[in-house]
Length: 112
Image 1: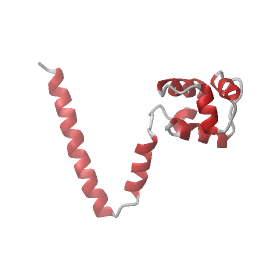
Image 2 (image 1 turned 60 degrees about the vertical axis):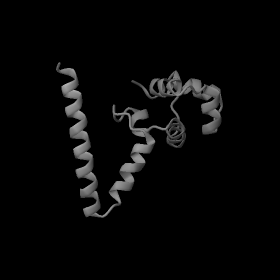
Image 3 (image 1 turned 30 degrees about the horizontal axis):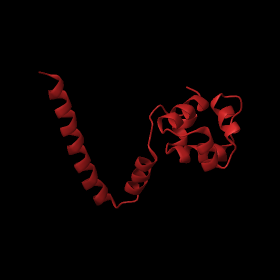
Image 4 (image 1 turned 135 degrees about the vertical axis):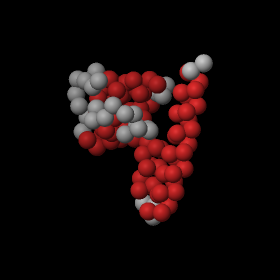
C-alpha cells in the first residue's frame, strides 16, 4: 500500500477530515488530498509531521514496515531501552508471563 493510501486509511479511521489534518500539520487540505491520491510526495519533514499527527510511525506510513506501531508504544519502547539491564530483565519477565498467559487463554478459548 502506498504512503497516500495508508495516510488516507489512518486519517479516516481516526475520523479526521483532510482539513483537520492539514491544520494540525501546517499544510493546506488540498495538499493532504494530493498526498492521499499519490499525486505528489511530501518532504521528509512534512511526512514526519503527518505521521505524528496521525499517531503512527513514519516507517509504517512510508511502507517500510507492515506493522502499525502506535506512537505511544514506540515511546514506551524507547523508555524501556533506557532502563538499567536488571530493570529491563524484570520488565521483560513480567511481559513474557503476561503474553504467555494471554496466548494460552486465546488458544483454549478456540478449542471447545
